[in-house]
Image (cartoon, rainbow, N blue to C red):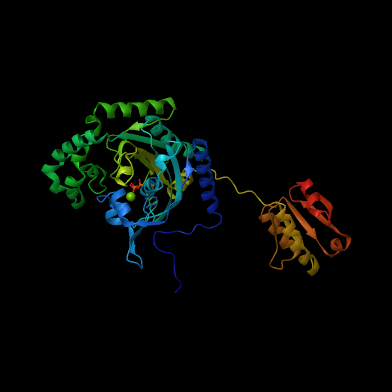
Length: 422
Ligand code: ATP
Ligand code: MG
């Protein structure tokens, strides 16, 4: 039997890949406008990086990592997300010493999680994400949110909902944590095993549980917003103020907590509200993680970022029936008749491509009519016709495929004369 593609992965074929290219180009262009610079880190890292950076109590570390031992006995893991590695690199390359601060980075690449595959959930998926490291200005929180929304807007998405929350600083979180423990403890037996172990380790994550989502204690759980100290509340107010100044609509949801342990202050998600989008509506998640750089061995440096997957973005665009920009046709298609003309087309093709034209020819020994069909299918602006007679007379016929108009160019100066046509 033929070998098949692994579960939870997909091939992206020509025809589909243009959507990916459009999204990638748009995201990169927006990063240029916002002055975020690309960083590329390895596909695999030491397992410990994610244990420390993502957090031991998260689903990612507990259940979803592709970990293996290499031949030298090292414990390695295919990266399940991007932030931990970017922060590692920031510390390792001493970017905290860069002249320009904050350090604004973006990444784009495959991530790996051992999940139950379903719509919008893959085992290999591509994330685009940004991290701004080094600033504790709430305007950078607003900027990061604006960038994510801007990319989506640029791609034509309209049915979006931005939800924000604050998880506060350490002091606020400790106060909230104690309130959560008091709230859930008496009835923790009614919750799943994961939540029972979360109670002591990280009760905030109980609010993020997918299994116990509908338990009545969830709705009445103490809100972090009631436990924010003065400074944290002020910070959150500033972020909201800036978003309003940027005319970006948002809702505050005090139950929004991110799955990763290192978040504090601002947390946000962008969901699709497109009808029929499916059960998983979160397109993008992000937030502030002021403790992470220190945890990774760097100096105490604040940071904020987001990540979204291209897979979910494409399904949101498809659900909203956004028009993907059509790929443009090619400049020319060379139609040759007879052995000599075919031989000559090799030179012509090469000359034209060197001059920067997109050109194609027939390699399947097709008849004249079939070659014209191929030219049409590829959306060629011109077809270039070379036959025995043309060769003898040193001329080539160029046909404009839209108007049907024909012109003759000399073989000798073909590229130059053709350039003047198009
Ligand atoms: P979810 O609650 O959907 O599992 P998450 O909290 O695990 O999301 P993050 O780790 O914050 O997600 O990742 C950010 C974004 O990456 C998500 O909002 C989503 O767009 C995308 N994403 C996460 N896991 C997958 C996956 N398995 N397949 C495709 N996209 C994914
Ligand atoms: Mg997940």
